[in-house]
Image (cartoon, rainbow, N blue to C red):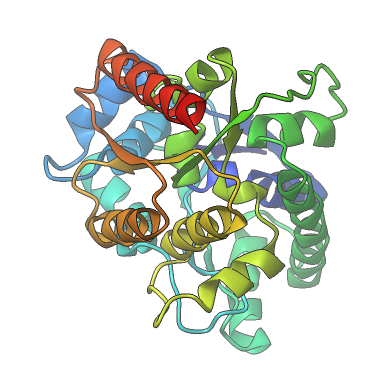
Length: 324
């Protein structure tokens, strides 16, 4: 049985979890192609007009899997942290319904609800439903999920060790063609949601461009959970969204380190939570006199425009550093 996994949204944060879970149950994994103009155009065609670019991309990636899998995995991800008051963007919770309403002739959607706040009894009921679809036992599904969580923990440890998601996945898959470590002096925190930062097409290769300029790039995934929790104490109140909390807390962590030359916030045009996240980061950066820019992305973003802004920002940072 083939399970299709869209290469977007939760892919960059949780793919090792999904992959390990389904492989333990004897399923084959099919991942959608890397984002391209065709996938983006398909997403724009099928998604509602006012959806943010990540949601449009998700539609495109699901369409890419249309004839490749027996099931397409579209989880209703509600909570996967120890924090009981946070959740994921409401659009994540309704993705399966949005896909069903906008696209026809798809394979069945596997829309398992994952909410670690629920009691074990209710989580087991969800796994019983999945087990029935995949023709396995609920116990085996539960054990597979527990093993998959350990796999995800290894992945997160690698990210905290300053590896990118692609590099960490290569290690998990025993592919060792990783780039050599860099000792570049200019340090930039590039913060944003993983499905924006690490999708080279929609981000216009922003991280790679900075690395090519000789910049040391720091991302939210590189901050250990313990340090994120410490950084949270600098805020009067937590945000409601998991990824938003990670972005704000990692920004504060890097700003408090005192060794940051600048900070770039990568956001999706029309993202509601980011309207608050962006202002919080800007105010924290201003308080510490650290240069800050926001790069907003949508389906009309041009690579040349992003490159021009990055080059100007890096040039300014180098000039500023030379004057010190």
